[in-house]
Length: 226
Image 1 (cartoon, one colour):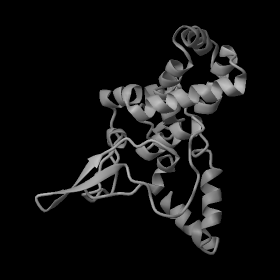
Image 2 (image 1 turned 90 degrees about the horizontal axis):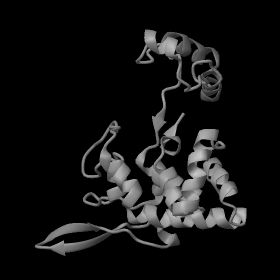
Image 3 (image 1 turned 180 degrees about the vertical axis):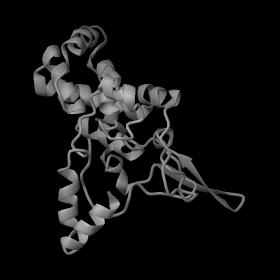
């Protein structure tokens, strides 16, 4: 395959745009992620690329996606980055205290987050954001209970769940059924299935839209790209 693509790159006069077009229009690239029991029985590891392997959003993508669906993502570009830590000196050594700052200035895309060698973010760290003090040529991708706990209890997620619920109420005039459908379309890019709707609508009525939004932000449909 690499030899074929290399030869085609030469034929296309080293046009990367032509190579990108060839790759993204290939059958392998456009495979669905839907499971196929007969294919899985033969190739459970997907070595032959019979499906698209679901891929979890990177740490920064999780944060930015939460801001986006809540309608709180600040799209201002350029300028100084925002800081989610407090630097201080102790004994001649620089330390960084993690913060959970509030406000539009701290709701910019994660690419504008100031990275300090000793600075950490509890939510991003949980989702395998690299340690800025060491070289990380390839990110690890883990699945841990702390990720679910963070998405249910972190102050940032709680605030954005409330904002998400307020957005839904404003856009659907308080109609819970409509809000549930709108929430799935915003967070998952699709309408809810009949089973999901049957579970979500009574839950939202009993516990409120904010609680339902927290559940949705913790779902595989939100965290994984299929």
